[in-house]
Image (cartoon, rainbow, N blue to C red):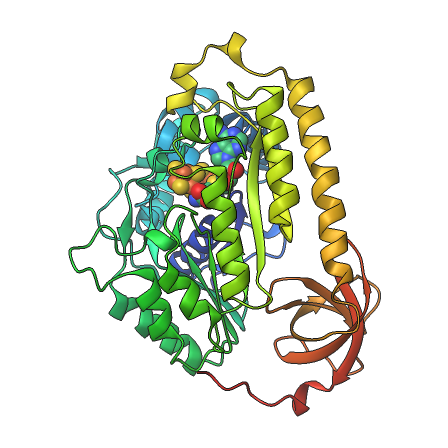
Length: 462
Ligand code: SAM
Ligand code: SF4
Ligand code: F3S
């Protein structure tokens, strides 16, 4: 008798590193014979890969688990597993607030998922509604878990270079949920990127909470981010990206490598968080407004056409109106290509959570006002910077369709990470095309394809 193929459905919240972890979860399940479900109704196992960086992430887990619980009414065999940063932080507490969760796994326990599924399945008929946690949460391992990634895209790949973070910015939960900085060995990273080149991947994105701190946990001073990038420029991958960069750790050497004609893309996501020296010090960011603006200048001088994007937090507990004005001033001077702006959210476990009492928090309406002011300033800058691209020819990696129902309209990214929409009669997805920019909006660029996918020459790597 033929057995039915088991299927999984993964929900991912949070950062790119979490998205990549989900590719690892998919790989572990695929090794057990599971296939991805097209929608929830097909799934035998649902996984939540959670994030707790902002707002009320626990509440989201419970409310989403409740929705899976409703599904279970018609499909009692369905299992729900919760992993990621909320699981690492809350552990068995998750079972106390939700009867719908069947198993919980930690950030270093992805390989344990098949065993947990088995245990949860065996327990299920005996439970009769009684609470019994099935869980694997180890202390974050020193070694980065080696996972059999099943990548979502056949032409864009994420590659982890570091996990964890040792910076302990006052507001941030990440070091507590992902552990201290751990770097992979350069040989392992290069071998993985080479293998991706052999599989014809066009673009590789190097991932770390702070990629520029790569190697700082190792004794050999030659193991650093600039040298890693230098080594990767020799590999047959058309585009190398990385995220995130920390202003405190970017060296002149990194700027020099980025400035050469090679496969490293001219985009840098570098969170500034605030433009006020006093707030930056409170946040423990390790730089001043002036140092940050000098770094922006050095990057723009050293890397022609670089697009610098950023993260900003408004309404940190000590942020006064004049501190906020400093941030507005910094944004106007730095002229970022784009910015994610967040309202400060106290995270239990962090330094700022314990240091400031709830009545010291900036009122939400004020946070919202500051967020809207900054958004408007940044929107105008993004628009003006995008306008400068009109008439330029840009190399675009076609990523997918731009709009449902229009089969010839495609969306891709330029090397400097601008979204570019264009029309093509041949399906170009997964290839490089040249697009002449005709229109520029805040969300990105629009243009006409100048060379058909097959006619694009392979770029030369320096
Ligand atoms: N490692 C990155 C860095 O330092 O550049 C950032 C990692 S964090 C996942 C992404 C962003 O979330 C941060 O840059 C920060 O702006 C925001 N963030 C982190 N903790 C926050 C908090 N408690 N409240 C609001 N935003 C927060
Ligand atoms: Fe969080 Fe700071 Fe580390 Fe970024 S550098 S992950 S903001 S502690
Ligand atoms: Fe969120 Fe964890 Fe990433 S808290 S941002 S998923 S490291």
